[in-house]
Length: 289
Image (tube, rainbow, N blue to C red; front, top):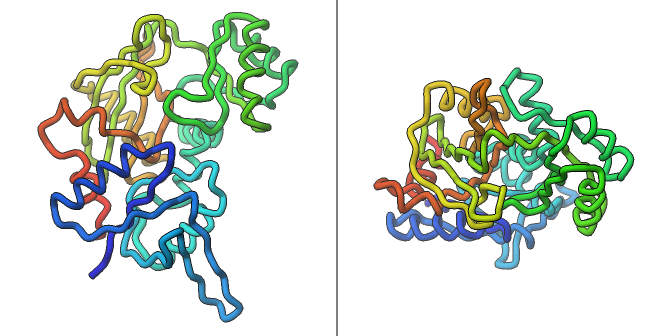
């Protein structure tokens, strides 16, 4: 019997918990894999053994996961990929985890997105980039989730302040984008699995907040996508090579644009608004045919 692997990442505990609960409800054999403790032993005879804090990992497939911040886990998952089914290819996950790499891939394939510039996390370069774009701007570390490591700036002083906060996490690259003021603190989260639209919701920033992330207090409601929005979301994940993903869209005067693509979207907050079991749908789409 093949066991389904459900990786647990500190940035996506709601997703793993929901998948574990769905597996229990539907009698799907599963094993929780603790990503931060993953390691791989490449032996001289050419064999490789992947293990975590609970011992050797022997599974038939892997659910969605995030890998940023855990290089050892990326190597371990790459080794597992030789013997088990991954819902999302490792290379695609690593691109989606990196906002700058995501923007590069989307641009190369002509996917409509929020204009993005990448620069070093240095005052002079960041200010020059922001001024080229035009204030107000949004600054983000290339790796982040749940609205963390994101700041807005209305002027050069705001850029310096934002960098002072973002640099506390250590060195790294920075992306700078124009703040899409016309979106008025609203975004659309689209979750797609195996090429099918699983759920879509409009997210609205809370009082005194500009980010539309649920983690920072945004509200949401189910929404019917336009054909252009659904087509754009599918184009984005196909470009990155993902099979399961969340795409954040903004509505603008020139049409919908991609804000971000997430390889392990938190669909759990959307469940109360939908009758079908979202976690079970993700699990079933993760199983090989």
